[in-house]
Length: 216
Image (spheres, one colour):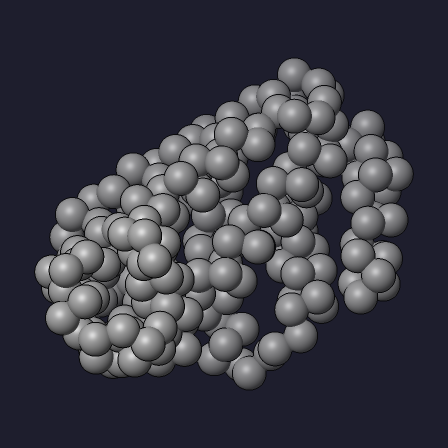
């Protein structure tokens, strides 16, 4: 077994256990037991839990960058809907990353700092979508100064806390949750569509939202 494969198994097991039990409740012994190695072997690759968290953060950073790079791939509303799907997949794979926000902030400040960079890029990208679609004539000009800045922040909040609130409510149908997730984000934008924007939304997005989620 190579060092790289062992490290990746440790990372994968840690993510799975963090999702299952919460970051604060997972111990090195539990991670080692999960992949069938000794704690000493685990410590050879990662000296402590903090080192594992940092390794996970590096991996998630690459995944977030991939999502952010999926921007302006399509010249219409499909672009945002596709990116929302990528965000949902990320939420589904790493719920601990959103549920354990305070744990990350209090005990892993450098990871929290990296996360703040991601947040800034995400909100900025959402905000740029307003300007792009204003130019296309699908979203109306900003009704009052700062509204679209606040709306971009609201959409970020919705995306970030979607999975935790669903877990609190006990919703567990991932396919249906995905549809509701997208609909709720689009609902934030709909009041600001022009007639052209409404027509495009009904032509391109509504059929996607009305599909049987289990056929996707």
